[in-house]
Image 1: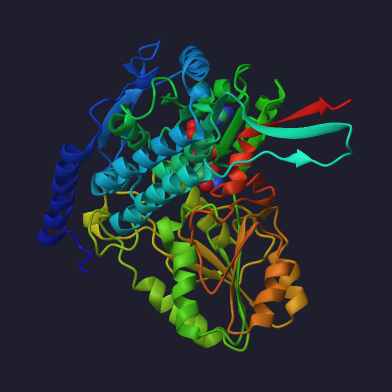
Image 2: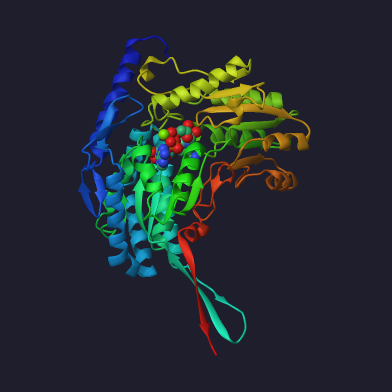
Length: 507
Ligand code: NAI
Ligand code: MG
């Protein structure tokens, strides 16, 4: 690849510009307004903000900056829809609605994938995976809507005790930017299956795909059942979490803001589900299939450019295979293609924003100052064709203290720290020695090793000889400061209901 500003780099740069302009013309949602009570409306303040394309640095679209008064309006609309329409929806009707949403997304899946790629910067091949999972999750929750049952409780012959799983009414959902539509689907699916109406706030970095979703399903979802308020965290997210008439809040994002959301929800004793940060260990045993283990490690850390809450960002390699494994891994990482995310050949796109690049680079600097060794990466690419974008090279850091903040904190970029182990117990103690507990990977050919490590790791999700695999039905969520509650499974529907007990006297 040429590294000077040659004509070919200039040509590639303008080809990227052109490809993005054309894609934006094809797939941007027509409406960039708030979606409240089934109508596209302006924010009360009239203020707007721009979402940018992190590949070109250009503004992609201008959307409404919703604030507390808009949240109030949306919550009112959601209660109206609950009281007048949705609370009467049978489970069969909820199922049909969720199935139809899945079908509509599937019919436009390439357009949705392109839109995610434009707004977030994720490689189109990975955006297609997102969208297929969106479809899968809506279909899964369509099924779960019908398998939702209360109980009869045995006491004695003097009474009959029954439980009903009732919806909360109106729930609030706050979405991050790393998997914009998929995280919305993870939350909308169970909330709607359980019979709730929703006010949802997408991340300010990536508000477009949920607007497009509502354009596509506006005639399927009764007015006011799903309301979308775009806006910033403090202005729109905080009033949603602290709203007196919201009965449940679900949030995915940073642990710091998760704690804020929890405090805000506490004001009115609002139920919460939190899916927060991670610093997940990936443990390689000496008997692992080396080639497969290298590929799984690449997926674990570089999928979605490392912007994954469950990224396998701390690698623990057994000393017997360390030299061979790390040399193959560094070669594979260096071979990854950083390029325009709209190209099928691209492995890593840009990070979502310039702010996120600075965040990642500051952790890389911290590691560098500690005299860590860089096996590969640690900078921004010098390809001038990518100069407009928020790119960071795939980075592997060795010989770093496990207490370093670059190791302890979530970087959320294409950066993995490497540790070598020989004693299992010492390794496991280190693997668990972080505040997070979202996920982990175990790479081994031995079922005993796999079982032992899976039980010893303090995390909600353990992948054995695979990573970042998210079939609907598999519960997902964190231990420790990685969160509260589980998503993507039948259990998630429980989180969107409250139990009502009815005791009939037989005397
Ligand atoms: P963030 O936690 O600020 O944003 C996530 C969502 O929360 C967005 O919709 C945002 O508007 C909203 N939000 C922000 N402040 C809020 C508040 N006071 N009340 C209610 N909602 C609020 O995350 P940010 O700033 O975008 O990224 C910072 C770091 O967070 C990342 O570097 C990464 O480490 C982590 N993160 C983790 C994610 C995950 O999947 N667990 C997703 C996104 C970020
Ligand atoms: Mg933020």
